Length: 399
Image 1 (cartoon, rainbow, N blue to C red):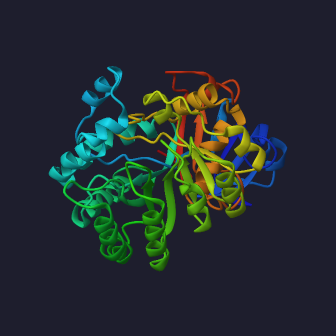
Image 2: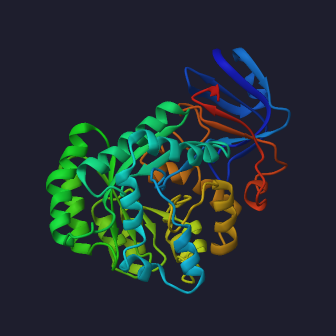
């Protein structure tokens, strides 16, 4: 059997099967950017590769997937961080005209080129730690023109770097200054979502359902409009309070419900029934000094898939390290090593509706790999401020 590339003398974290699906002293082969074989060294005799790569006993995992970021924005909110250190709450900052709205002002004022220049260093930091797929949300424009600008820039980042960008429309992120929430949601549903779908700028629609965001009824209005135009749905839910947004999103077949610190039993049951992924964001939990831990044990017991993400954004999680996010999840949320690694691979892919194509090492999937200088998988979660990435492979090609 001919193939393009064979990686050998490697230990594999397949995340396919029981546990992490570890194969010690394994091989992986790819042709035309797709995995064609995964197995122990003795299983590769039939392969005739054009190129052989000796991994020297290193570990290979699927390329990491960050399924929740707000990577494209302008401006800086370090001043708000200082305010929070002095005891001012995130909600109070938002009500005073800071928070999301302050980033909106800076992002509206920036050109496409300026947004690209600001966003590339953040993206590069993530790629340097093994990211091969990244979701990027809009939400800092709050007009059709500026939301479209953010999503254009997100797609351009995917052309400038070897990474798959998944664009999500988050027009319902905050109420624009001078607007009423319902009037703005009506515009999101009647004007913006149809335009995003027609222009092919977004794959999914997200909404911030919260006391300082939008009501459950308004979130449902967004979900109905998204479904009408063939777009998947997601939700920022139960971060500051329980608005029952996760259960609502699950009833609309949402890919994921994200944050969910205040999620209740009904929400967990609805997510389980719908297959909606719980996306946990320890960076935001840490940065805002939250004390309400997501109901990890109850989610785990219910069999709800647990994904992890950086939530990279300027105000509540200026984090560009998936490896640190794993450590935070283990330390703050008591997630296991297996859950943390699966959360940035298989389950993150599921949260993006891509689990049949990425997030595991299995024949037929895209050959997106991260090659690590580690002694064991736990090293990816254990170390802080240490990057053991040896190589990143995108669709079968080292990048």
